[in-house]
Image (tube, rainbow, N blue to C red; front, top):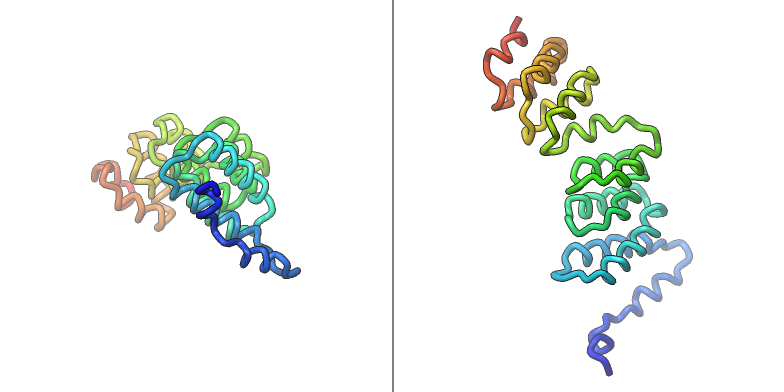
Length: 197
């Protein structure tokens, strides 16, 4: 008998559970397969393709909480197929924001999928580490309170003079934003002085 058959897990319990009409095992299967994928020491091309196929079929039909848990595990994992991340992002809402905030790379297909529901992605993007200076400047000019707080709380970026000036100006009327700005180590006292006026 081949070694893989000898060590195959006993799935009889799952088979019995699947016969219960009101019990949906899809969330359990997706979470278990996600854990196995992330924890695997090695993944060959066929393993990645198999996981992408399974996850791509289950992600659209599982509940929001399961999708969010899976997104938290897969988005920061470099070996996650972009197609799986795009499928997660296409769900929109919290799941999309998790993917956009923690994905190792943002491919054009991933961004397109995240835009499917027409949402403004600014606040999800503002929390990403390593944002280019031009993106930070563009986001800081918007004047959106959620984006402002996400930028101010993102210690993985440096706020340059124009961006800092926009945020500090709005921080004068927003105590939460002001608190986040005051906690930043990259802003000098001169930059923060308008908060006290």
